[in-house]
Image (cartoon, rainbow, N blue to C red; front, side, top):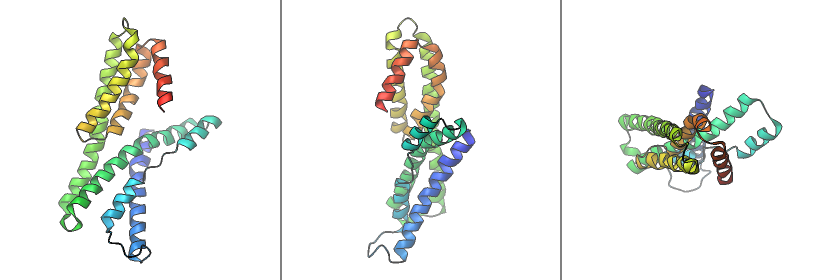
Length: 205
C-alpha cells in the first residue's frame, strides 16, 4: 500500500496547503481580511503550516472497532508521513518568502520543487541506512542483552539528529528507520528487550 500512502501523504498534503493558502488569499483579495499587507506567499506559508492532519483519535477508534486492515494501514501510514511533507513544504515557502515575490522566477520554483524531493527522499534514505545499521548491530548483542534497548533508542535518535544536521526531513528519517528495522530487531533481540522497547515507546507516545 506504499503507493496509496504516498499519494495521500504527498499529493493530499500539498492539496491541503494550496487550498487553505489560496482560499485565504481569495478572501483577502475580496476584502474579507481587512487592511493587512500580506501576499500570496505568506498565505501559502500559513497553509503549509496547518496542512498536516494528525488522526490520533481516528486511529484509536479504528483499533477499538477492528476496522479493515488496509484502511488502518492507509490512515496510519499517511499520518506518519504527512508531518514530514508539511515540514518540507514549510521550509520551501519560508525560503520563497525570504526571497520576496519579485525575485522568484521559474528557476527558483524548480529549485524549490527539487529541494522538496531532496529533503524528503534524503531523510528517508538516512533512516533506511540507520535502520540497516541497527538491524546488523542487534545480531551481535546476544551476549549483552541488557544494552539492546539502548541501541534501539540511541540509533533511532541518531537517525533523527543526523537528518536534522543535514537539513533533511528528520521525521521521515526516524519513521523509515523504524519501518526498516522493526522486523529484524524483533527476530534478533531477546524477548525481554523487545517488550522493554515496546512499552517504553508506548509510554513516550
